[in-house]
Image (cartoon, rainbow, N blue to C red; front, side, top):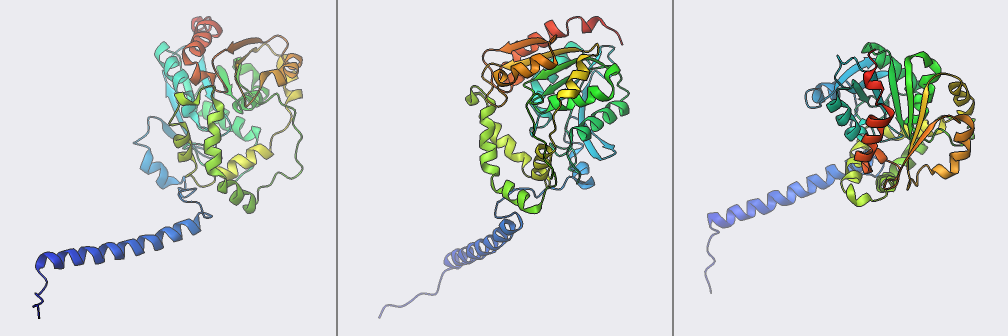
Length: 336
């Protein structure tokens, strides 16, 4: 009979490692299951709350600043704050926050303009208050921020849903606005106003279950999405914040027609411009051109032949040339 030797220290160590791995695996699976249950079956969605601790953890890591406004904390960036040029205010669109203005912001900064970009409520680093996300909410947030920064006369540039915001801002303080610049704006579409604008838990849960496809759909903003390979991943980071889904649903439900408001704006002395990508599949210019012609017959149009919904990114050089060397070329000489 062969003699069975006692296990060596080496084999004892291997056995301990195997037992530890098995234990850790079981524990991790248990914790992972609990995480999935808490997030409606979807991992890594809506688990970060943008509270005071969130601000404390991030305020020294970000290039901008936080300010407490009446409906919640707002994240913003400002450059050339002492400049005498009229302030350029960049308002982002429906869901992607202020980083979407990166090429424009940096160019304005380089040229010496006072320029401000910020995250609207429910987006990016700004707070997600439990309110109705209306055009008025965003316009009030914008003016409150500008008042806090002692900014008076402005050039407003609104991208996509941001076009709705700058229209509402113009209806509140038209005398403070030099120019309205609409970029791929969805504010000219025909709107059927909803009677029930509330958002229930079931709607939020269903929306979150479609987060992956929502991220993938962001590619539709570009004529050539291959230029922006990290765009989907970057968008998925936004879905980590608690309340993001509710903010988007509420914004969509609270859309109302801006036709009458636009007619009032047309009676002011505000210069109006529309900028569009020729390959915009999100807000197709040809489908709303007749409406724009009616409400803003004296506007000036600019089109970008190699861009989709986001010309300020996809055709950044051409966009910046149009904006700073054409639309704003005289503005730089105006000291305000």
